[in-house]
Image (cartoon, rainbow, N blue to C red):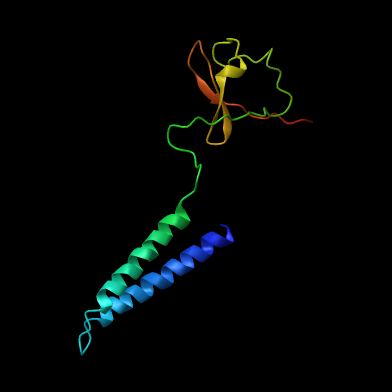
Length: 121
């Protein structure tokens, strides 16, 4: 979180706090209804600062595509990568990242399993 965002949240909290106090104080004895608009404007500006501080320009949207490069573990030779179930030849297009782990889906038998790194010794 950068400094401007933190300052925005702090300023918003102060504005909302004092806005609520102004609204609440408008109903004290003697009543002062002139404080209500001041309090409402302060609360609205405070919530506007929260929205502005939370807004991230250029953030990925639900329909955006993300390119992910897969670094295969250990000494994987894609020429000899075979399906554990049916023995079908697998290519790089059959490997996807699921929950941070490389998962292979066989195009022939549709079996999915996680690639595991064999010990190097």
